[in-house]
Image (cartoon, rainbow, N blue to C red; front, side, top):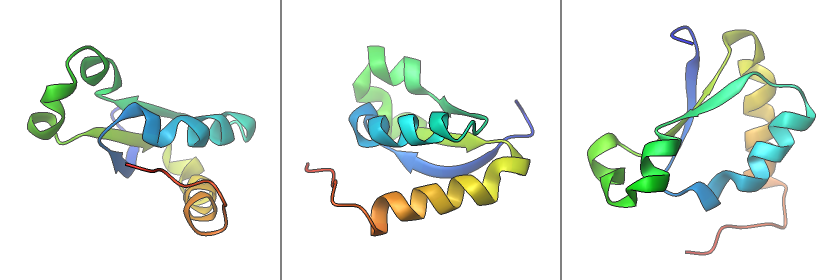
Length: 80
């Protein structure tokens, strides 16, 4: 997993729940770095830099397209 590339950064898990489903539907190889730690101790978010979406380099372009579409062409928005 050390070859995986960072595509996005999040502070809280709820920010990417729908995105996770979209990536799964397209069989994108990914993982969320720091997801478990911040699920247990959310106050570490700033210290760790947040939760990082890491994708396999071969899936990067496809995952970026999904991410861009999710944020730009979607009626779903994260409300903080």
